[in-house]
Length: 538
Image 1 (cartoon, helix red, strand yellow):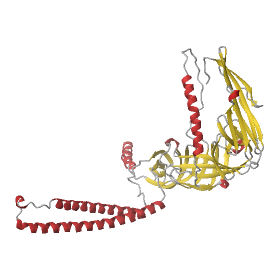
Image 2 (tube, helix red, strand yellow):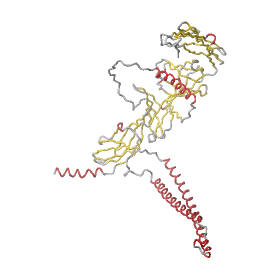
Image 3 (tube, helix red, strand yellow):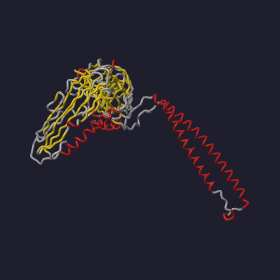
Image 4 (cartoon, helix red, strand yellow):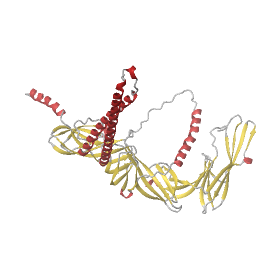
């Protein structure tokens, strides 16, 4: 009896395996978007049979991390397994499109076939006409043609040619009608498809076991890498005495294959794809060896550093203002901060299509109290920049990102906000001011080179000239520097600094300058280098 029972089970297994799967479509409910990736949550309902069955949940992301799939099911339904695929053979699947669209597609297929037949027939008859035209030269008796038969041949040739040409004209007219009908149907299909929700190729296949046949609700969540967001800012300043108006934005794009419509949206500064394993130090062994020559590497590093920095500066300067779709969501956004990241919860439903286009969302509007100063370092850049110093900036929960700068209703360029610095004050560049001029020039008669015994002495002298061409006074920070020696054989001495404050380790000179309207001030820096005359100094 036991053997019979096992045999019955064995016979029934193939039948179960061949049962038609149940298909259902996932509905997008929520997305938590990270800098790289997004955690997506869907709901789905399906009528499942008693016993074991297969449920295919359609319209999930085209690519996802299978190990992150999480399924919530009714308490009496057991999820035996969950798999992801975007290449599922839908032999049991329902029609992809609505019945009305299916009829349009069938009509298009029929008309396409008719058009192909017409073109084939026309091409064949055009070839026949070409053949007749190429063989119309009568060769007389030598070709076996009797003179009395020539009129008959000519009559046949003429009649056949006219018949073929008339038929070709009729076929062309039929082709035009078919082409017009196809164009009309394609337009109808495109219109209806645009109204239809975009469906992805991604599917989650669940193996289920239920004690009864029932309608069950499911919730599936997973992480997809095909989504991103990054912070972006707009800084507006009206007057130096007023705070900076900062618009905190989120730039969001997704290409998951699923259109996000009416979803609850969260933005997080976390990274779900980053390794969360803390580092472990291993024993550090040291041993003797031959010295390595790093001189070329240092030279290469020095030669590459400046061009890279310059390129970055040029790129920012040349970037045009980006006009993006903007929505005012600041009143519907709540900011929360936990131990590891910052998140923004948007309380109103939001739509983001799966097309990779950037959506700009206004997250917060802040008024930043700032202290304005002008800044210039003419040794490396002959521009004077307006800098806003913001104290206690950590309370604003800013994230690293680019910012458009608008000052006095004029777009002045881009800057970069880096709140991860260790300084107590956040300095934001608000643009350069052409009404304040700076010039750094070498004083020739105060610069010289001479040889003393085995040494070479060089004196370098520069004048820095500042002029305020504005109608109001300005406060300005001026910086310059003289070299720092890392060799005992090279001596560096500061000869003149015009009362600047000098950093002993870096040899950076700083002047706090006040300039009245149309006032000009000059500052001098002079230093001496002493080193062996058979050497050069870089």
